[in-house]
Image (tube, rainbow, N blue to C red):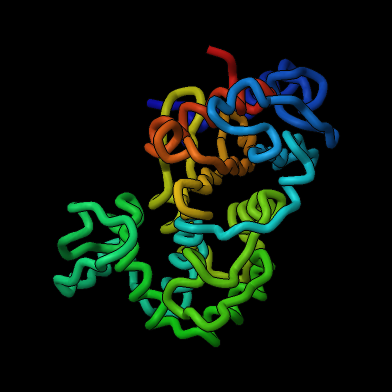
Length: 286
């Protein structure tokens, strides 16, 4: 059995608490104070000014940043928006759970990215894991622009702007969110501060687990969008849970001409995130 969900006797918990220093007293327990770090060596093929990594300590509120200026800059959320889109669909009743299904209309757009795995019917669960764009466009249409914007304002999600593209504003429209805002949104989501039902939050948490092991669990979502011809923006945002109910929220953001070729697949981005989380002490060393 992995360490998450294991119930320990009270005396064991007390012993663990006494034996493990608070965050900030040891480098492997996460950020206690705000600080800037240099992680540029890990972003192969990306200019340091075009990348950022932010980690927010759940217990302490301390924040570690690589490239603070970029961490405050707003960008299209791309498919990281599937996190709030899912929450809103479930909370509003547009979707009723992970098995909520939509039929594919058989249309493949002439422009933009498409993968064969999208060319079929999907459930909410499969659409999240496969990052199925058409499915989430349809959810957004059913939610409606006014209701969507109302939820985004309540969530303090970036600039909370739907604009004139009600089923694609997170891909090429007016919505913008910074890495700093991403981690604050994720903290409020995880801690139940978004005024949505606890059941909805639990469904969402189950849908975005990326890695579940004995020493940690990482949850999150990637996102990729085209900035200009041949230049892409890539995200990976989420949280990492370690034993003892320790949670760190993170946002990885980078942009460049080699981003898709070098950092496109989830596995590659996740491996980078693990490395960076270990560098800042939010993950145990191997």
